[in-house]
Image (cartoon, rainbow, N blue to C red; front, side):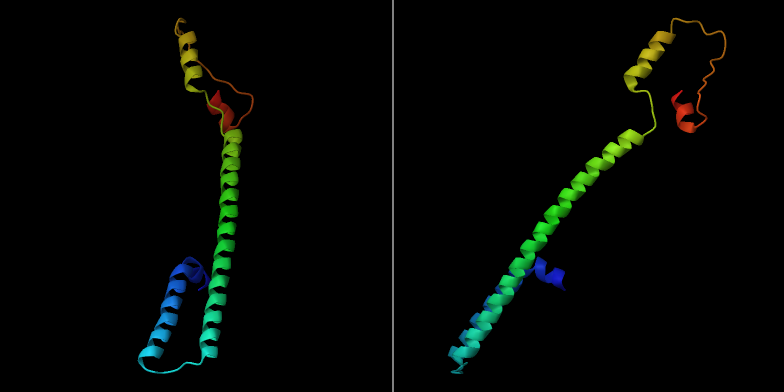
Length: 126
């Protein structure tokens, strides 16, 4: 409910103004007299609620901005962590240079790849 009010406080403010105007218009048409104290009380109540909603909306906007900043920082930190922990691999120019260096040699025997660590990442890199 609070979320609806915060998102739509401008609409609620407009509806409140229409209701207050309608009360004044009905009072004139029907020769019905609301006491001025009631009208002032309604107006003050409406203004207090509207100001509260504006304040709540501004606080929510600040919280959203803070959370968006934290999200951006988290995304950057996650990208850095992925970069540091990603498996090693030859980049394109390294692979091309390696092929270029090995092309002049005649391959008579099968090539064996060895790695000190017996994990998948080391084996795949080798």
